[in-house]
Length: 133
Image 1 (spheres, rainbow, N blue to C red):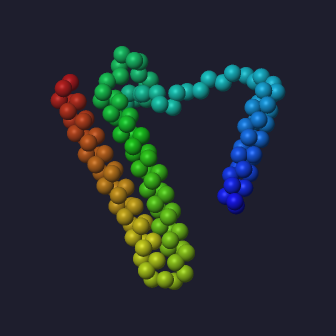
Image 2: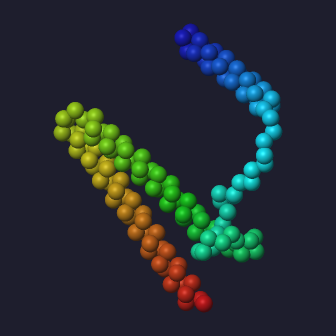
Image 3: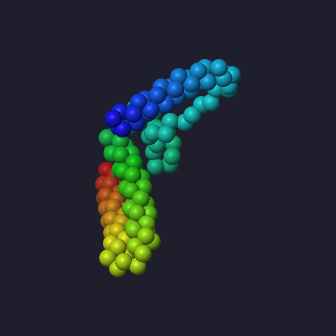
């Protein structure tokens, strides 16, 4: 019964939010149009936007790899924070201190391995592109 009450309260709040926000947005005054840059726009090595004809599988793979590195960097930061949290909240317990320290250490090692692999792949691609030119 308790969970049923919580679910009812959740849906009640959600429905109020779903009704009030669109009504508030509909009554707002129109503002100037803002042109936003496409965040996924593919660029060449100089940062110039590519046209559809210039997009090759190599460019797409490079974009995916850069996106993956951003996610890995974010995950590494989260793991560093988690390891620091474990370490700070250990209250002197040697096992928890060791676990937090190891989490931070393995996070850094993982980040170094990923960046080194990116450096290796990037070097090989540049070498192959130079050999084709």
